[in-house]
Amino acid sequence: MQELINKGIMAIVPEYVKDRGNCVTVYTNKSKPVTLEKGIKTVLRNLFKYYMVDLNETKKRYINLVSSPNNMPLPLSKNDIFIPLKTRKPICKNDGATGYINMRYLKKVIKNENSTTIQLDNNTNIECLSSETTVKNHLRNGNIVSKCYEERSMFVAENQVTYNGKKPILIVYEK
Image 1 (cartoon, helix red, strand yellow):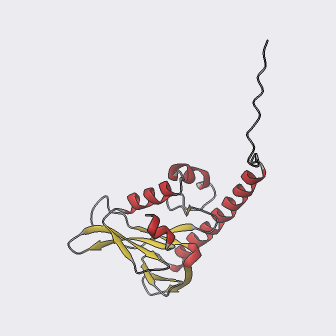
Image 2 (tube, rainbow, N blue to C red):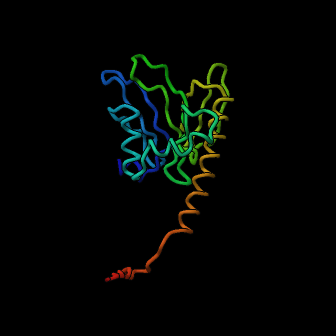
Image 3 (cartoon, helix red, strand yellow):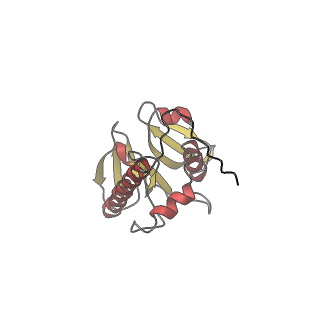
């Protein structure tokens, strides 16, 4: 996972791969797409675990801010907000249909007749089954989450206790 993160994750997309089944393709900024034989939930869980971010608490924090609580943008940092977009029709019950696009690397949204194409910074195109309106809605939600994440980060930084390399003083009161 660390190797993929170092290459800049642009998108995480569930796909069916011949002779492998339900997989996830990870698109990175500095290499070719990598296919993992894992489900989308597992990949997201591992990504958030690497960043030491609680996925469930993150969802609880931002659920009331966005217009579609079932398809919430997922923030890893101020700059890495992953927006959910439907990228395939699932075959089996537990197969995920939603892929996640990192807003930082989104270059262009192209409207098609029955779908939308997401173009990334490296000119990779990802087909999305959502309408252009839905995609723009998710982008707006992503911007809202990004701003709230930034405000929260600034609040935490202002209230953080810094010891400047010194050990805190322990005061013991005796009766």
